[in-house]
Image 1: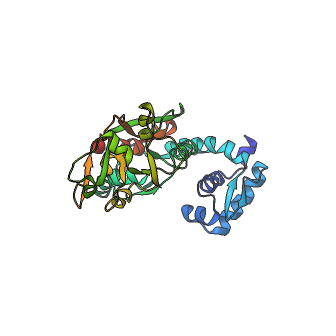
Image 2: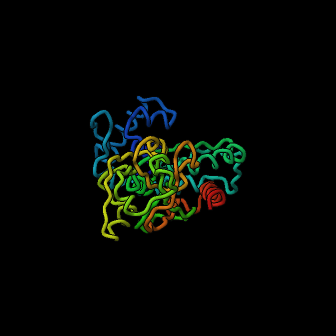
Image 3: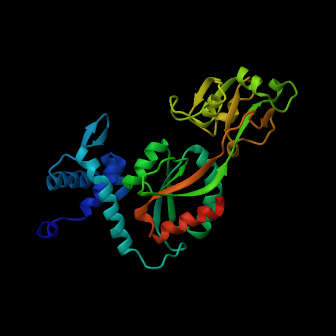
Length: 297
């Protein structure tokens, strides 16, 4: 207790920002502080904890093993303090807060057009910061307290991470209509003869489409791998490529493009929102989650 009495607990807020941003200038902007003030706070933190905490690597800061060890406990402690100090009643019309959300460009295309008008109408002082990462990184950001909510497909979650299904999604195929010779679909043999485009952040990661084909003893040729859901459909026109993706991202079947059902069974998947259990009791967090369930459920 004597040691705690001599600690400036605002230093922990600075450490939280530094661990999230991994850059002194960005952390200073996030905290609305000067860069020298954040650098001075980092020096004090290093002395207090007896560890460098963040070391310079290629233009940024990399957390030490000690920093990574304390990050989840730090996030949980600060969340509890914020919850303790928050007003008992939540009013979206007057709340001033920033929510940090993580999603792919698929998630952004599906969610944000519905969410933003609602936020501007009901919670005009609440800001959103949207980032993109792989599903593994998003989960680690949830656990570490760097983000409030993440959206996507998340199998095998840790016990500390909560999830809620927003909707079920199915797959569909997209091809240049002229390349189909007047047809509106293709059988499995024709599908396997075509070159394919794949949307994924990593080329070596298993995906639902190729797993379903492997179950049937087949393999397709993928000649294009691209990380962007939004642009992928617009690369198919004028080519012999087939794109098999989540159906909600596909444009209307016009402009010479044809949308059709895959010629083999691909299991549907659940699109979910995830958060850490420490945020269960946060009224503002509860409100945002419920709005998303209403909009997309």
